[in-house]
Figure 1 (cartoon, helix red, strand yellow):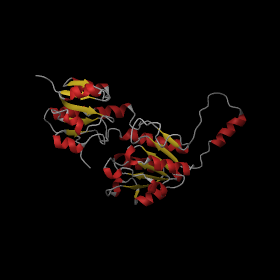
Figure 2 (cartoon, one colour):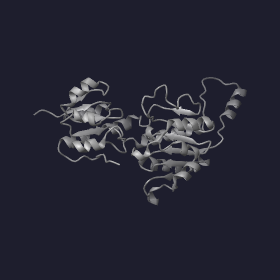
Figure 3 (cartoon, helix red, strand yellow):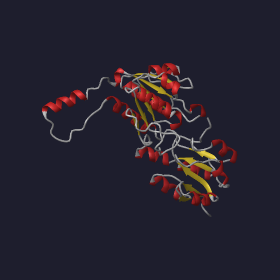
Figure 4 (cartoon, helix red, strand yellow):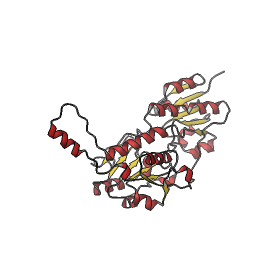
Length: 318
């Protein structure tokens, strides 16, 4: 019997890819090879993507036999869930696969913002030694500050545990009521209080349409003038022009942005480029081998669906 064809358009880690290749005809075709991909879609029963493959109505029309789209990751904004549902195509992903990696990076970003630390590469004269010690004295430590968390899902709630462990005051806002036992001591507040009260504000919301441009000019106006603003969730939640304007006007504030909208990689017109108190990173929050392997095991749900079984992690429309 012929094996089902599954197209892989972005990176999978070797072990999960080999596992699926034992069961399916796994065809690697980068999403950038448009003509070749279009030719393969007619045979495909499965499609595995990550961040940059756009699964829209146009693509689905070229894949009449498609049964499953798998996102090796968490976010689903590059997949038209409604169009997939209309075509009877199931969508699966890997919620929780990169939680620990993202939490580690956000914690590192907080420390980077507060605790500059030079590396010594050789002998240092006594006078310079003491100068460096004085220059690197941080005006505040994390235990002096309030951590604000916008979105209290897997990652946001994990950040609350980090804040509690570091003796920070922690406040948060979420659309749903979180039981007190699951808050790690964090206090729920309305959005205006979250913005005005956070010394460090980290965003962990989902991709629902209402979250587009969540951090806009009005939100920025309510932030502290020396806020540390961190976004590792989705680029679409930030109005880059508004954040750029705020950072230029508030040189004691800092922005650390890992995800970018409208496009990745960023181009020369990106509003946040070239601002002294803005740090940009290239979408690295899930960049650990462990997280990448966890995300790549989405192949198990691909095989479940192709075998007529129910998936473990189906995507749900928001």
